[in-house]
Length: 285
Picture (cartoon, rainbow, N blue to C red):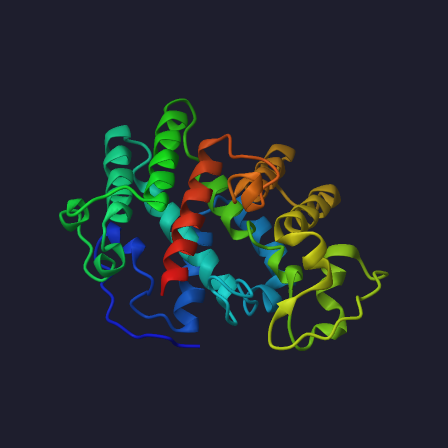
């Protein structure tokens, strides 16, 4: 589903705010996704491959939403990849407080622009400071930036926890949405086992699943990761699994936006910031 086509420049860090990649073919999205997996340490990398081996057919083709953003096939994978891209760029500045503050300030000022959507087509650190005015989005990003700067002083930003958490932060969307072909019940077995009775629900191209209406993707993501944690078939420690659960539960930031808990750690704040930015940009195009 294509609504617009425009050139994109991916030459510098601020290009993370571009909606498109230089080559946004399905293969390019997959390649970038696995590039970030290659940055993980072996325990996290092996666990990611272990989980994706069973999930990939669904994860790579699922919708990112029914509406709002990434509401098309492969939208879930593209959204996940874009969130990792944003978070990875933030992590690149995380060791130097001054560099991190400057970078977060550029992002904030960009969203303060009265014409920020136009600026996304020609974004540089210089243009990011022009024509600024407060708005709800930029105020939220400014608040998040301050929290990230504060927590990062005493709590370094772990790349493993950050990327692994993002890979699975929306994994519940595999169950939350239904599409043609779900009648086989394969996706439910990955969550609830072979004896689960498949809900009687006929989906069109995309629809809310019966379970998606009851629980939502955050709760369903927690169910999936909890089951993997209890099976204990991987190399991750209990704390690693708990960190991932916390990322899933907090990535919408507050209860009225769907999160049962609010972020508390540097990783959790960065995941929400990256998720918020990508969803906000995608919903405007």
